[in-house]
Image (cartoon, rainbow, N blue to C red):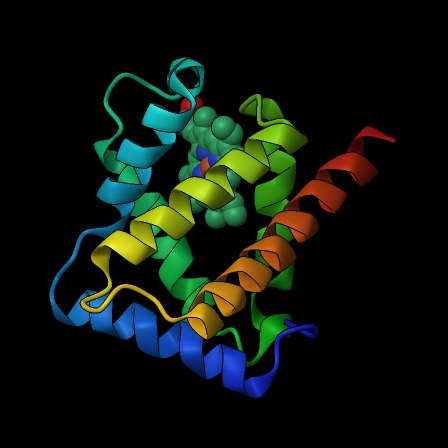
Length: 141
Ligand code: HEM
């Protein structure tokens, strides 16, 4: 994304790969954290979320792999944001999802995350979340 430096893109991609390398299932840790932080969000999801985990994991991987070339995922992410209005996602939910994701990455990374890595993931997530929220708001306007 435009507000991530090249170095931050590398930090995100390398820490993501270190999780993949030890076959950590990031999506599982993410949902566990999400429903612990916000138990009421559970009702928005279907009862069986295994398919959901795969979809979230695939989307995360696609975005992370293309972070250096954001135009590849911009349209996809905006459409994802518009679909999320129908899923009942509110702007407040995005902050909670960000917290749950960051915690999951910190848990799963072999040596947790450095301060610079936390900063990179935080701005990366905020960039994606803003893109989704803005597309959803533009649709509602
Ligand atoms: C960067 C943030 C997010 C990403 C990358 C993401 C990704 C996804 C993906 C890939 C799907 C599969 C369905 C589809 O492609 O439309 C999905 C479904 C869903 N997401 Fe998200 N999501 C994000 C944020 C949120 C937030 C903030 C909420 C609010 C709690 C949320 C709630 C849901 C729900 C409820 C579904 C399932 C809908 C259903 O199958 O009935 N997501 N998400």
